[in-house]
Image (cartoon, rainbow, N blue to C red; front, side, top):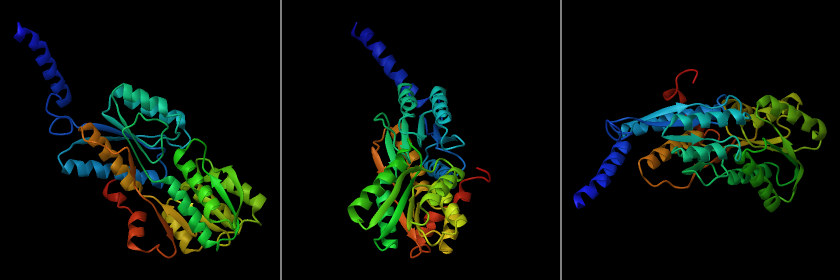
Amino acid sequence: MQVRRLLPVLFAGVALTLACRGADGPKGGAGKPLRIAFVPKGTTHEFWRTMHAGAVKAQRDLLAKGVHVELIWKGPLREDDREQQVQVVESFASQGVDGIVLAPLDEKALVRPVEEAKRLGVPTVIVDSALASEEIVSFVATDNVKGGAMGADELGRLMGGKGRVLLLRYQEGSASTTEREEGFLARLKAAWPGLDLLVADQHAGPTVDTAKRASENLLNRYGGDIQGVFVVNETSTGGMLLALQDAGLAGRVKIVGFDGTSAFVEAMRAGHLHAFVLQDPLRMAALGVETMVDHLLGKPASKRIDTGAIVVNAANLDERETQELLKPPLDAYLKPGE
């Protein structure tokens, strides 16, 4: 009688073990690969291409350790298409991928699909920009409040602690850039009383074109009074830079941006861009994938991982650390057009 009562328990244990291992062995090992979907905010900017390379790097590094990962890269074309990003996450969850790595366009709009994915057994690691949910494995990103404060300190130094400045925000709902804006404003108030903030309520929008139009409007209103500008991401930096160049103010107005591109380096060498805060998107994406794999393999994962940032200016532009961050080996990981 005791043996009969134990049999269902034994069979249940065997079934659970087989479900975890798969028919041909453990997932990620010699059996089926771990299917991980990576969902960026967009797919057209250099920042996201670098993230794509970082995800592929992690995939290869894990394979060298005997862990097989099938990486699926898919995101919206534009960085303001919340509906499409929601649909992408929902689709991956319904397909039953093993995990999702997500850079959410909106800290609130992506909460429901992420929490629904978890209910379906699909966990999520958040990268780049925070999500207003505790139902995630980990958050891997720059300390964006600190990044904004770094921008304030650099602008204050460039201006000698005196002058009129403006902040051009990115777009509402983006947690990463909102934190940079808040970090900039808090540091400006605490450490740079000689800097007079003229305006801080205008948004650049999702593209270089929308950022250029917003910048032109600000320059038309305040151009004669502005001595310094802080902008908070790649597209808004690019748009402001173009507007300053068109207005004949490039070089005369101190501009501190965020994120780095080859165009920004050229502008810095020309004296049109004075500094930018530089993240490490390659490392960020790689750690996002590796953290998800650790979680799926039953290893502990830190709830918050800071991937660091530096300020790039004329003094350190050609230093090795700066150049390595500015020129990650994308061609080693991505095919042309990816």
